[in-house]
Length: 166
Figure (cartoon, rainbow, N blue to C red):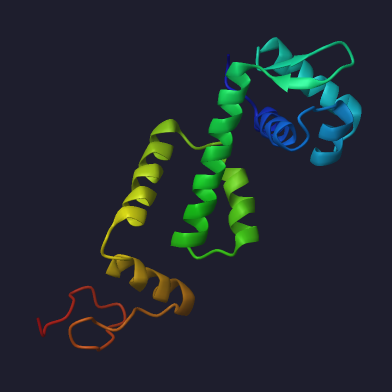
């Protein structure tokens, strides 16, 4: 299967979500969820059928093939991973984090995703709590000011040399 368009990826995720909620997916359900008209859904689903990612009986229910389910689950995992990163590391509110995650996940490479997974897992399993640099970054992102030096308590705006009282 060739690279999917962002639109096709959104359809796969929507089909998976609807399957989990309603067990059956109809064209009108997808149209309503995605805010498009039924003919648009029919066109995109046609392409997904040709790609072997969805099945649909003539004018019937839509379902993901096993391959389509794997692709959709991976896309949702990417989106969730990015949302978590945007919320917990970059301190974005939930709505903005979700919007950005949806936009970015269409373009993230497998290698980048792997690195983000490793980074977030590291932050989650580190038994020493949040790394000090992450707390410093949060302070900086909220205030625009560098945090006080851990050693002396002074603030050195723009000073890259560090504390001289070490």
